[in-house]
Length: 394
Image (cartoon, rainbow, N blue to C red; front, side, top):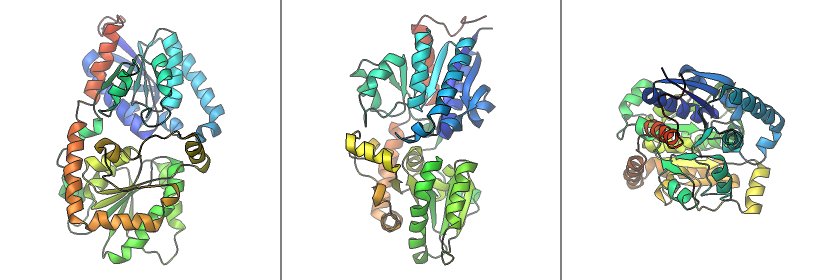
């Protein structure tokens, strides 16, 4: 039987999830497929032979990567050597563009088809990066519907494949079932806290998130706080922030391992770090307040060089093209500001109903097949480059 060889490099939890789904789609379509690369637990369970773990790429911003540069350069060198020797038919970099585009350039120069799964936000900041993407990538798989047009204007092959979460999460989430799963009373008020999936995010955002909870808790009898954690490292950091709270702060707080979807479906509202979690909250129909803090040097560079070009930074607002949900950035991320916005998200019934309608429209617009469409697009690329899904290697 023919065997398709796929080198695949995913960074952090969200990339691991995307990678596992894409691996299953490729295996379903191409039959015998081998995978080698950088993988998290989901991709390893799906059969990817790991050369490194996905959490090693869970770094973002302009400054943080510099702190890890020697380690990242060693990792890149190892991957180039090992993957090149393996002779894959295609290289797929999932998110982590600062790292994966460098790999793609090397592999494309060796005649390997190259794919970037998840477009860098070139439409939002540093648009000049599109020239590098054009040099490095044969195909960009886009999760958001407005992205391919940007690439077409720069002669880059790009396809909207939909966001996998939009297919995985039902259009009508079952709030009662989610509460039952978590052992919550159907009537009790519930607030979800999602302070980030990266260590730096939790270090910068856990304290103001907890301060907001402390602010509103006395006005809400029997308020339950759910804090789903992406991994053990960020859980430990969040627990340290909880331990620093004053003795008088009494919160009915449950820290969960994973279960973000259950928590967001069950919650009346959520305080969410900007990123994929905001999209998950939208798809779960959970009213939210979004916050983000960059490291001080990163934010100074972004501001000084005017690298950001959009009026919004959260995915719900970008996708809707309007200010659906409140956003707080840098110094505006205070317990008082977050608590005030949460009060509206919890209590303003017409606003909550408006969000439900708008969230549903965005949800529907993001359904385009997800991993199945991505798998089809990769195989079309290989056929167009003269490689057949069958007969690649005997």
